[in-house]
Amino acid sequence: MITRQKLIDQIEKYKPYNEQEEKDKILILDWIRNNENAFSRENAVAHMTASAWVVNRERTKILMVYHNIYNSWSWLGGHADGETDLLSVAVREVKEESGISNVRPVSEEIFSLESLTVDGHMKKGKYVSSHLHFNLTYFLEADSEEAVSIKADENSGVAWFSPEEALMRSTEPWFVEHVYIKLLKKMNLCYNGIKTKEV
Image (cartoon, rainbow, N blue to C red; front, side, top):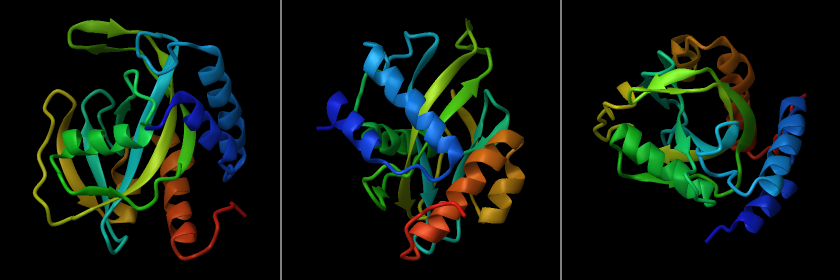
């Protein structure tokens, strides 16, 4: 069981890859330490989320969903909703959003972290104000031959793309430049036996 304190310890030990992660690590730790409801979306200013960078065994394909709210192909993930074991949240969200049942962590360590802006939008007939997602990303593996299915209330497409296609399919330039390219670089470095550090 990953408690709030254990998660804080994991984040403290996490070595940032670049300046974005250095700055966002400070924000995330401060948020968890100083907000009792940091993991609940009832906190309308910001809350914790977990995302997954899902690849096939050969590391040649990336799993993405077409997100209805953002109108873009994107990674998978979701709200903590009170849970402090964010790896479990990431795995659960992948299963729910893609229909894939055989999902496993490549590593149980934090793969990256980000402070993400969310524009105001309508959800289930109600307006959700603009807010922040303080996000931890985990590196997961799944079988690209397994059948996929959409989660109609959240996405309208599930597909595997080559890394190049994944970058092209996203219509969110900030995510491509500051998140997806970073994750691809980290994947190539870290899992070729080289510790990640941006050069």
